[in-house]
Amino acid sequence: MKAPQALLLVVATALTLASGASVGAGPGAGAGATKQRVAITANLYPKREFVLTPLHAGALERDFGKARMVYGTWSSTMRKGQDIEILRAFFTFEGKRGSLTIRERTEWVDAGVDSGGPSIATGNWEVVRGTGEYAQVAGGGRSAHSGLSGGTDPWYARQEGFLSLP
Image (cartoon, rainbow, N blue to C red; front, side):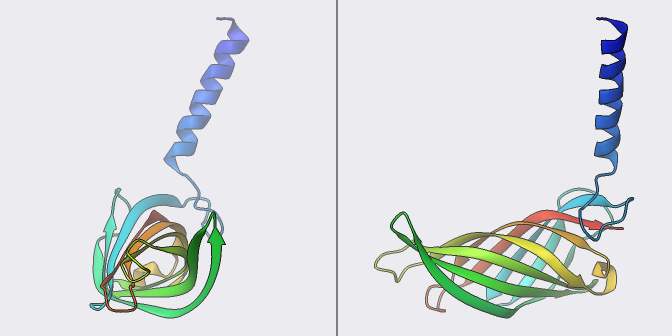
């Protein structure tokens, strides 16, 4: 290997390692912010409870408490012959360490018989605001939901993604 190629390899490796050590979290995150992978699991109906679980080490710790949908709007579309109900909603998780409000867009499809069975959804979410230990949190991720069959079935949700503190 020639000297210029070896130098380029060393510089590229150093940059790769340095960028992995402190990865910015995007808008709202300071230069020193690091991402922490978390999961929020919730029984949104009927219990309205949640648990935030860190999936990697970081500043945020496990938390639990009450969950609620603050506001939601529904629209519908059809994709390749399948009806899709789109929910745009805000969820607030009020735990022992503070409250965290997220905005989420999910696409619901019927997974039952004759449009009366359970429904499932996937979506994207992002942090809107927080209080307490979540006051400076930024980030978001993906989600999965099950339930919501005419409001009679339990509604479970799991949001996974990256959160960061400055």
